[in-house]
Image (tube, rainbow over all chains, first blue to last red; front, side, top):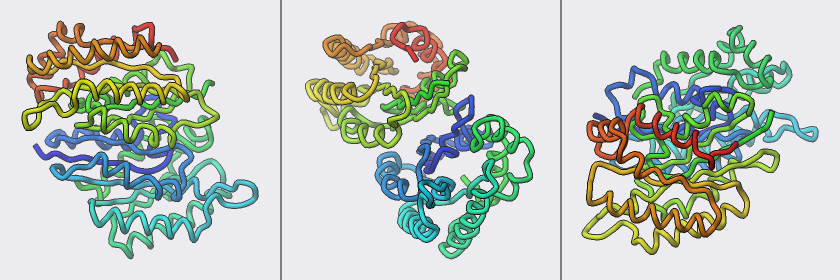
Amino acid sequence: MRDVRICYVGDSFVNGTGDPIKLGWAGRLSASPQNNNLDITHYNLGIRRETSEDILKRWEAECNSRLTQVSENKVVFSFGVNDTVIENGQRRVSLESSIENAKTILLNASKKYDVIMIGMPPINDDEQNERIKELDHKYQALCNELNIPYLSIFNRLVHEQIWRDEVALNDGAHPRDKGYDILANFIKNWSGWVL
Amino acid sequence: MRDVRICYVGDSFVNGTGDPIKLGWAGRLSASPQNNNLDITHYNLGIRRETSEDILKRWEAECNSRLTQVSENKVVFSFGVNDTVIENGQRRVSLESSIENAKTILLNASKKYDVIMIGMPPINDDEQNERIKELDHKYQALCNELNIPYLSIFNRLVHEQIWRDEVALNDGAHPRDKGYDILANFIKNWSGWVL
């Protein structure tokens, strides 16, 4: 059986915050029955509140400890929503820095690992969603330039009533189990999701 | 709702290696319905092949990134089996160093966080099990000395036929879903497991 080790690196959406079964979309992907012929080691490295700047500082040490020379290794990144939060009158991370941080992360990671990126979901705040949507376009363009598979999920989730309802009834940002089911299914059925 | 964030730090048994549903005992504990009145953030920091020496190097940076000043924080350690592996004619980590490493980790962690420790399971190798059993006694004594709750699981799992069968049919070390169910239930029903 192929020994496949996956690090999912990102923020609270990667962590699966809000999911009562504590898998999130990342856990659902790793545990999917479509992987029954693979030996998958699952490493969830999503941290609540983290921006692209925080992830830039830690992704490499954390992935290097987990990915080995004897396994097939994959790194799945997803971050950016926290960059677009306004704190004390300004974005936590400027648009330019969000792009620069992602570029540095993706360039370095793709030298050593098989890398893909998942976009950002909408939250329950129209103004912030505009900023998320803008960053999503920038990240899509960056990944095209770097030849890294990128799945934009923003538009699809905006139209998912279950996602929107769960987010609104939960904390305004994170869904619960059905929302994570939906997102995991998007990714599973995407041509860029290859194990 | 209380904001409780838990880091589970250790080796492949913490990671949940072998578990098809990718929760391991740690995920089962966090997702337990007994926590329905808590807002639990789950961070699984188990890494395959890691010894007490490896964990000494990384536990603090990884926990500090995840645990905040505004949450109730808990760190659950479990490691030691890999220390007892013989490689090139000697233990990967000497008994003395295994104890010293654990002491340093536990002393420092308990200064900042609510800390508990879970012991090591038996594997499918009688000689190594003798060494695991010896280290389990040492870790129990160390935790008594440091006043840190320690749950020894070795003797109970030796007598669990389901655990033994899953380990033997899997890779000789890790169980599958039923084994992790059993271990999670031991911990859930232990007086030291308090959230």
